[in-house]
Image (cartoon, rainbow over all chains, first blue to last red; front, side, top):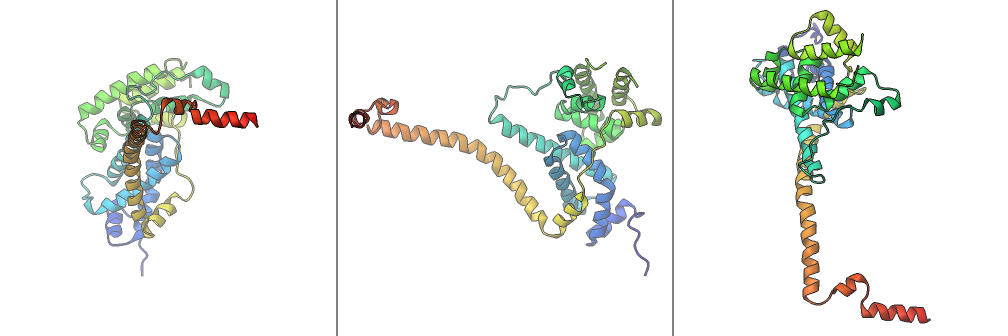
Length: 188
Length: 116
C-alpha cells in the first residue's frame, strides 16, 4: 500500500483529510504555517507567553472552523485572518481589563522611543527599535504594517485578510507611516 | 547598511511592493524571525486529540468571566461597604469617634491598661 505523501499534498487535500478524521493531515497544516502564525501573533502581541496561547487558539479555531472553509481564499489567508482577529481580541481584552484601573482618556504611549535610555542596556540594535516602534502603533495600524511589511502581502491581499476595503488599508498604511516616522525620528 | 537607508526601506515597504533584493535586506536587517517554542505543534495536536478544545472553550469562557467579574466585583464591593457603614451609622452602632479610635470604651481600656 502506498503511503500518503503529507509533505507534498496541497492545502485543500489536507483540509479534506482532516475533516475525514486524519489528524496527521492537520499536524502537517500546523507544520506549514506555524512560523507564519508565530510572526503574526508575536508581532501583534510581543514575545510573551500569551502569544503562544493565542497561537494555539488560532490553530484550534482553524480546526473547529475547517468545515466552513470552502477554499474561496487560500488556507494561509484564512489562517492569517484568524490569527489577526485572535490577536486583536486579546489586545481589546487586555485594554478592557486595564481600563478598570486606569483612566480611559489616557492614550496609549505613542511617545517617541527613548533611544538614550534604551542604549544604556547596550543590547538594542536597529531591529529592536523598529520592532518596538511597530509594537507601539495602534492595533489596527499594527496589523496592516505586519501584513504588508513583515509578511510582504500586497495591499489587495491585506484588505482580503482584514476583510476591509482597499481604501481603508491604504489610509491605515499612510497613518501608520506617519506614526512610525515620528517614533523613529531620532534613529540615525 | 546605514539606519537612514533601512528606515527608508521600511517606509517604502508600506507604500509599494519591494523587489526581491530589497525584501531580503528588510528581512535580514529589520525583522525579527519570531518562532513558537519547541514542541508547539505537539501541544496543539495534544490539545485537539485529548479534549483540550473543551478546555479551550472553558478558557474563553473564563476570560469573559474574568472581564465581567472585574467590572461587577469592584463597584459591588464598594456598594456593600457603603451599605454596611450606612446601616451601622444609622443604627448608632458606629460613630465617627469609634472610627477615629476615640470611643469612650477604648479610652477606658487604655486607661486601665496604662494604670496596671
